[in-house]
Image (spheres, rainbow, N blue to C red):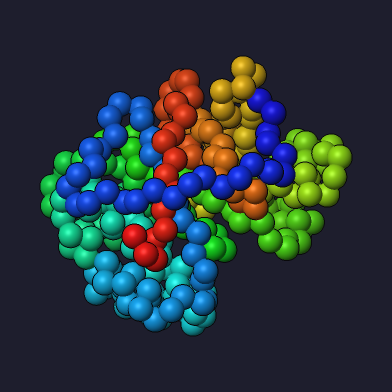
Length: 272
């Protein structure tokens, strides 16, 4: 598979988040991506109030402790998006959606990968959340599908400083072979998003060093896989073509094959 170069395709049209209880949960291997671009740090107060109304008191308090306005806006938008999509599936009001977290490496609840908490072992959907710059994004999957999503918005990065902690030698070399600086930087962002989505799908998160997760293109062009540390399992994924300045990927933990192309929805989180 040829990794996309710096993208020139137009951004998709906006759609609306469905009303509470009106959206069916994904089934089988189907995946959904919901994302938005937010003018972080510059949101009008009425928009911030609208986003805050979707969060539970605990999450709202956590977001309020962020020092920078950009981080507070990003947190409001990401968690509003997550809860409003889950409300569309469950019929629960966004503010009443309960989330838990579970850490795969230590086997304990209270931290780690988020999940929809229904009060029992039943999970109507699987979820994952990411944000970078102005972009907030979530993945929605059927019960039991271990999914991870990551987005990396283009920005100034000291790649040489990150090389040793993120990139395997062959991944760095693949980027270096690109003909322009823009294509080299986009390739590195794509690789980074693949790795982040992989460790999130496995449930290990950054307890797995990203350099030890090596991404490999699928020869037929249908996706990519990640060579994970021993005992983690096999991760496979697909890149997401969201916007010219964004590299993003979604990954699942599965024994064979690749994810089917996800349904991608771009929404206006501040107004819808």
